[in-house]
Image (tube, rainbow, N blue to C red):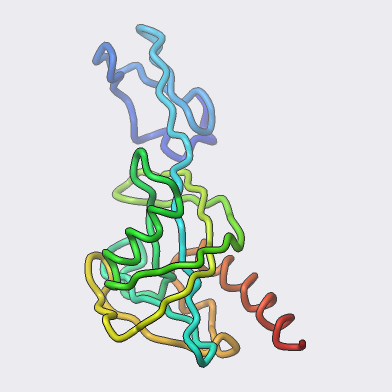
Length: 182
């Protein structure tokens, strides 16, 4: 049995034959000892938006649900099947904040582990800088409990509940400081 799989105690029954002989085969896969069926937990794609207003304040959200309920986060979410990562981010920002984003530019990406209801999902998080023409229609919805604007140089990354957002913001603060020097 492969014990480095974070879900080694979560999946036991084979989806193909129904036997309870499904064992971890690698960090991301399971194999049935009875019928040989292989099951993979491959990376899901998620995107975060880095949105600044005209005062160089970054738009952050308050998580309404677990994991990290009540902590700060960057707006965004998972791409749905058949959806590109940029279209997924546009959709998520509309669903979460009623904002229309444009001018998406890739900033960075990080590997992430996303614990949700006893399963750990492997994620590839991507961050994009984005623009918004009008913040007047902003309205927290869906899995967002609230929002605020924080000056980039005052960001405390420890207030963010998700490791991926902390990594992105740490990199963005360094990038922003470099830009501010010129």
